[in-house]
Structures are given as C-alpha cells and as structure tokens.
Image (cartoon, rainbow, N blue to C red; front, side, top):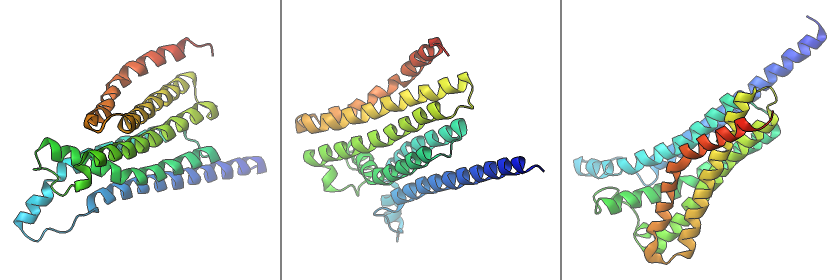
Length: 235
C-alpha cells in the first residue's frame, strides 16, 4: 500500500476512534444525569407504604427523563448528520455535558413542584418547601430557564458549527443542519424569556414564567418557514 494511502487510512481511523470516544462520553454523561434524577433523595422502600410513597414521584421522573432525552437525542442527530471531530465540536459537546449535569436538579425540582401542585400534594410528596413558596418557585424558574437556554444554545452552536465546517455535506443536508440551528436558538430564546419573566414579574404571576414554554408549539412553524428560506438562498 502506498505511503500516502496508509497515512490517509490512519487519519480516518484516528478520526473514527476520536468520534466514538466523544460519543460514548456524552451518552454516558446523559445516562449519569438521568441516574441522578432517580437517586436524588431516594432510598429503597422498606414496606408497602414506602413503595407507594416512592411511586408517587414516577410522573415527575418520567417528565424529567423525557426532557433530558430530548436534549440527548438532539446531540445524537447532530453527530449522525455532521460527523465532526474537530476541536470546536469537542468543546461544544463537553459544554453540553456540563450544562446537562447542572440542569438535573432545577429540572427535578420544577417538575416535582408542578406535579405536586397539580395533584394537591398527592404526587411527588417529597418536594421541598423551597418549591412550594412563591420566592422559591421564582428562583427555580430562573435557574431552570437559564439551564434550558444554555443547553439549547449549545446545541444551536453545534449545529451552526457543523453547517459551516462539514464541507462534505450536500446542499440538502446543510439546509437541514441550518434549520436545526435556528430551532435550537429559538428554544434557547424561550428559556431566556421564562427566566426573565421569573425575575421581573411579581411573585404572584410566577405562572407566566412556566407558560412561556408553551411557545415551543411554534417549532414546527419556524422549521417550515426557515427551511423554505434556506432553500431560496443561492448556493
């Protein structure tokens, strides 16, 4: 085999190995974050009453699981679409993991408090008094919104970096990646809006901070609009 071909083969194999290591690390970190949700404040039930008490927290855990899985799957979609192993991709992926681990406890408290309130205290009975008072709820929405915005903003930066750097993608793939960059930037803006509302609105209007996330229903509309716009741009 010619020396040039050997060098190219070694570089490709090294890139695949580096990509696999990064993927495994990110997947493991998200799995660890979900494990923290499960074990935070939990202990093995000693009797039927304790088991029933523990099961009341399942709906909040399921919502938290779905939320983290959404962010994790966005990274999976990015790496399947872009397949980059450069320094920028590495740093942004590590930053996403950092924010995911910060996101765990505000996420758990927000959903536990929400289910506790909706059920009149039946679900998530172990929610702290911190999440039952207006000041505590406002602080949670600020932390949650900022964490949400940081994770979504990092994903937006990843997709934007991929659209600019992955020169081997065809025009259709580039458009898809650019659209996802816009979508995650919009998600980040919703998180920032929620945090801002929790900071500036009177405490009795804390519900507005949570209601801001209903704006996520417009993701499909934004995706369709920007997809048409990107297709109209000259190559």
